[in-house]
Image 1 (cartoon, helix red, strand yellow):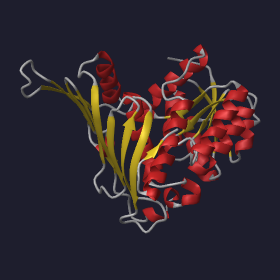
Image 2 (image 1 turned 45 degrees about the horizontal axis):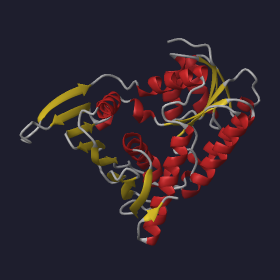
Image 3 (image 1 turned 180 degrees about the vertical axis):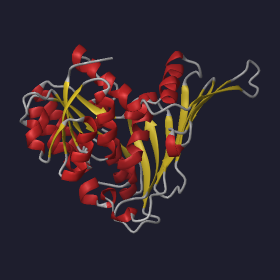
Length: 336
């Protein structure tokens, strides 16, 4: 796929670099921005594109049609809003602001500008997850009964000094880091959430945000999702298990340090004996960033809702807020 859409990226960190690599395969990357002049120059030199150190230069550039906002959480909302107000489409990295109030600011600006916003939920585009969604939609394992998911890593020396552990910059800890991905996937497979019960812990790292979160999601269709996200897992893990009336689907790994991405499907036999399990591995490079970008380009060109929409980001943050509230009150919280 090749497209002439002119794009700018704000944020030249790890995620900004992944976005840049995806964009250049599909569209016309014109400008990269970051307050760190060395970091942004190094990244822009890799792709022979211009760079700047102030996002207003991006917003005021009339060539730019789409802005990818890949900054720390504190700046996701103001830069997304400014870009929308300048009549540009926006791909904003999760978690679409530090809370649902910030998400709604983006939502209001999108409605006023009539531009398309996509939330950066690249996990939807991992091959095992995409295949699992197709199997569930086809009815391969019957109706979903419950989901069980784990996502975590162990940090690294000095992790407590990184921006994710600064509440003013991040808005929260592991729940807004990896937890929001699980919330989004649970919603994608089982629909909107009506009730949550959560417990946040700061079990190890000397920080002001949580390093572990345990939470239950009660979906509107009465499916239950049970999740644990952790910065004290020590060995990277991603596990997403879906149990239905006719079988199960297990997804393990995301590639790289999370291990080879694998899909296991077990379908019940006629006599309800042990399921026959079929396994498939996806050892190739991570194509989720490119596939997500292609989906967004199609959404803009065709005027349709992208997979991992603005609404999905807003709703995920509403669930995040409810989990924090549930932990504070030590009781279930209903989403209105």
